[in-house]
Image 1 (cartoon, rainbow, N blue to C red):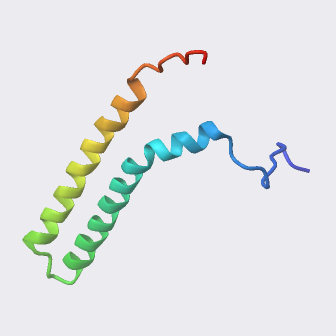
Image 2 (cartoon, rainbow, N blue to C red):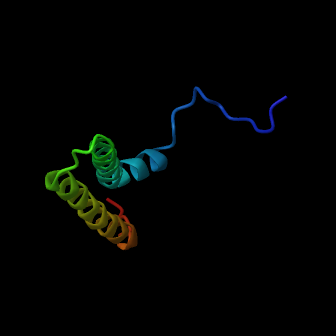
Amino acid sequence: MRDHDYDYDAEPPVADLAAIEDAEPLIAAEFEWAVAEVALLAAASRGRATVLDVRRVRRAEHAVIRETFAHVARMARPVAPRRAA
């Protein structure tokens, strides 16, 4: 017996899809940051971490910060009421 009823075959609501689409640039930036971190850790474990590896991580961190601010700004902007046609 399941604790909750959820239709896994149903399409997600339009609002959920819109929220995911709105957050996609931030998600992509966070993914690139994770990739850069893994590459830096792998290089460091081999004893070959370079200045370029560190710069890549720093650029990825800055991209996440920029996208976070942009995402918050998009969320904070007021929704304009729709006009009747």
